[in-house]
Image 1 (cartoon, rainbow, N blue to C red):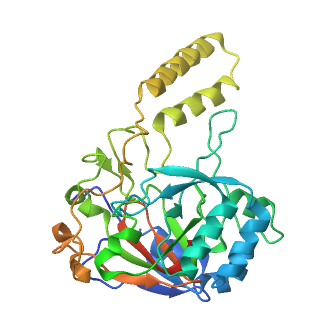
Image 2: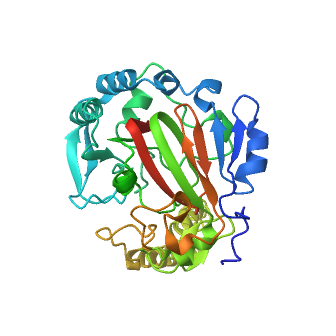
Amino acid sequence: RWPSYRGYRCKIKNESIKKIDANTITPERFFTEFVAKRRPCIISGLAAAHDFGILSECVGSVEKWCAVLKKCAGKARIRVEKRKQNGRGFGRGSDKNQLKLNTLLDHLQDAAHNNRDADYYLTTQPLAEDEEGRPEICGEPCTSLFLRTPKSPPLIPTLLSTLIPANINVWMGCGFFQKKKNERNSSGLHHDFHDNLLLLLSGRKLFRCWDPTITSIAKPTGGQPLRIYANGRIVYKATPSVLADGRDSVSAKAQTISSRLDHTDDEDELERLLDAALDTENAHRDQSFDTKSDPANFATIPRAHSPKDSNVYPDLRHLPSLASFVLKPGDALYLPCGWWHEVTSFNGFHAAW
């Protein structure tokens, strides 16, 4: 049951998620009651109550959202996931195709017009790196939304002013609710490695959530975790040196050594630091990164094909959980790292930031 996790735990099965009003919650209270306690919540009316730039103007309007994207990033090449013939859901980063954003938008709008599930889905994008190997925080179309729109979205939302963005994405597809084929538009059961703020712009998303203590029962693709930090950060064998805040301990040590090298003139100290730098470089090189297999953060337990809502995953049917809930446009979900969740997108063209 991972006693090392010290955050919020579901007390009963189908526990109601906490809902807060974006007009009344303050950043200080939000941090104290949700971020610090690692408790998920729905933030009602976030896009209207807080200035999200062009995103606030596009909530509920697929036509305007597509027009904005086509104008600022239509010719940009993006990587999209292609639906497999077996109907497996999206989100694992496999089977990616390159398309122009204009092509994807036309495909999604055509699917919505004809009431059918789209074959492509926009998920996370490859990130460019700076000269020191540090990745950018976003790819297209987010980069163009920041740089080429008069009302760019905020890099750090006011409500989360105490947090630093690790990655920013647009999620976009087209799907319709089908009782017998619900998994076609499912993300699959998984957890994220960073806290998540998801702002829904169009469509609907159905969420099912469990806290990090179910990790062993979920049987992750990455194997049983090496550790789960107090904040819910889950660490697997493939990346053993990850710290609770997401930094790599080897890289953090190398950064400290580099800083000390810049501020010392002592020859003995310089020699010790250079030896330490060589050791950390070798340690980083020795770490194995398998980019061909499924991500480590997906569950492998079976999913029922036509289950009752509370028994989608039979192995979890007796465990405490949040009751399933639907996010609507303009609302946002705060989900701390390590929380297991499945997202089913429906109601046609759906987009989230």
